[in-house]
Length: 228
Figure 1 (cartoon, rainbow, N blue to C red):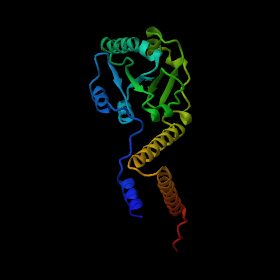
Figure 2 (cartoon, rainbow, N blue to C red; figure 1 turned 180 degrees about the vertical axis):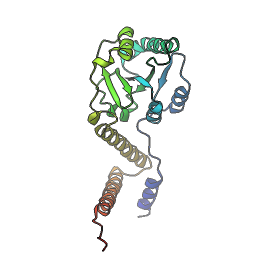
Figure 3 (cartoon, rainbow, N blue to C red; figure 1 turned 60 degrees about the vertical axis):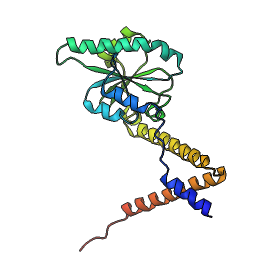
């Protein structure tokens, strides 16, 4: 009994892992604050939404470190960033400005779920809540032209199913929740708890949270008494 209580205390104090963030998050955050020489910024689940609130247009690549296509295309993507950023410096103040960023889609699984990434590399042009997926050939000329001119010929992703809509947010929430549950289970197992007890704890917590949500929703939906 004492052992079970200790496990419950551990469970309540365990720090949940973030949604698949790579171990070099601190380095990535510093890269986001000050762009690298290439101008390609590193976005993670922690800084993605805050970075996109600046009102600018973003060309974002979802890549995987093990993807051979991504590795071969990396130098070209750096040239794309340099070309777009140099074009901004030499253009008029009202010209279209495009920031360039990349996301480790293999590590940032919640972000990949929001964008429904089906393969690497994948490219998206984000302008506020308007998201367009690039489906052309991977070349510097074509991607730069897509970001500056040809994007209008591509239909935006419907907001309902897009990364900023309810379906995209729901996919991201499910992925984060699943990652957190797996992390908690592994943390409890590492403490010497049997898998059966660990599963029992997680099931009990899930049922408790479900009951709390039902009670809260019920209270919010209760009709208010009429006042005379």
